[in-house]
Image 1 (cartoon, one colour):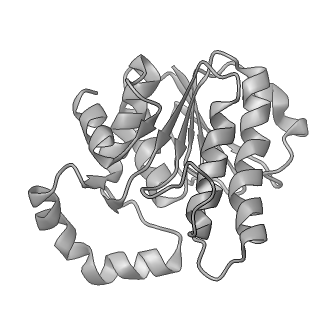
Image 2 (cartoon, rainbow, N blue to C red; image 1 turned 45 degrees about the horizontal axis):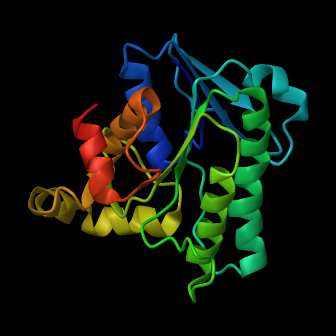
Length: 223
């Protein structure tokens, strides 16, 4: 497979990138973002895009891919709905619409979140916006669209969150995650298992488009 990763410098993206570089059936990985990953690997290419709303200058570099793992995301803390919509819905669709045109046989995997509101009418702002984003992605002419809704994720193998509040939280209570994961393995995932699950659905698809934490866990075990 040839794979695109958006958000490869974030916590989830770091985990996905690691699993892609380890996978024997992944031949080429292109990490798309404003900043390079800082990783040197024979499979990996950093594609720097200063404006993630505009891909006209790099369209030739976005052709010929089998899967896209879209791990970009921001916290809604302190944002109004208009700004969060721009950084979530608008930013995601700007990339996805181009990729659907260039790679109609692509499998597109989007990292959403548990509690996302598919009706787009609930009282929780971020959940409405995520739901609207998911619904728009499902209407695009990809080979397949899969929506990952993880909850708690334990960072593994040096993966770190770029969101300050999450990074501080992991620093303070991260020691609790391994024993909690042992008790609730289908609820608490790892960056490793999320990456493995993404590769699994890119290879074989999944029974449903929306994957909740337990479904992601199962997909990873079947990888």
